[in-house]
Image (cartoon, rainbow, N blue to C red; front, side, top):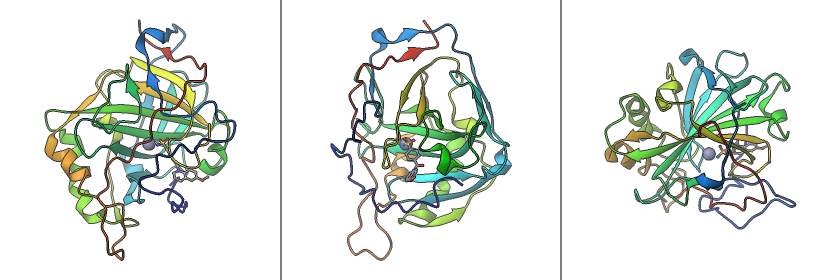
Length: 262
Ligand SMILES: COc1ccc2c(ccc[n+]2C(=O)c2ccc(S(N)(=O)=O)cc2)c1
Ligand SMILES: [Zn+2]
């Protein structure tokens, strides 16, 4: 597991702050301006190889909910695409809005989506722990997938059914045999990629972002269950709905966004 060790207290739920990292010139998320992205024929297809047996738990960290994977071996990996090394899946989570009108972190030509999935991986060729990788330039690779409201996503339902058990911050339940590949779009060959950062504290500029061009569809009711989660722990008297847990777009600062497609 890659994030359960972290105390997330520094991550105030409504935190979307102007908080910039000193000298932070490669922050995320960004607006992807399609006509300004540069086609790179050297970009390869993504190669994901996820083992559902490595799925361990699902928990509410007070900012989103995370599905964590055993990343002590190379059983669930990502390579190819823009990556030179092999990366290990450690967790996936989502960002969403209080309404279907917004919620994603990245935007495409300023278009907002109701939610965005992040599959978080760390470079296991170069580092031996997530904690080491998270502070290195080429330490992390995060796949971003946009969610649109439409037909029900059968694969997502198993995850949605587990959410009521983790309504409050810091609640954890065992969660096994979930194959995150079912959350990827049918076409994973078309993506944008750029160098950026974590979108929550510690905002480290360690991420090779791989944002899928094709979205996935989930039902309105499935997304409504995301919004039934709470930022607050069971002890707090005022309960706050977990919504709008996204960061605002950050300056591109001269970075180039490459595309794997024309
Ligand atoms: C070194 O201290 C850390 C390191 C990482 C922490 C973290 C707290 C929360 C999330 N993380 C994360 O791992 C994390 C944060 C954001 C993202 S995101 N939204 O995919 O950019 C992915 C992963 C603290
Ligand atoms: Zn995220």
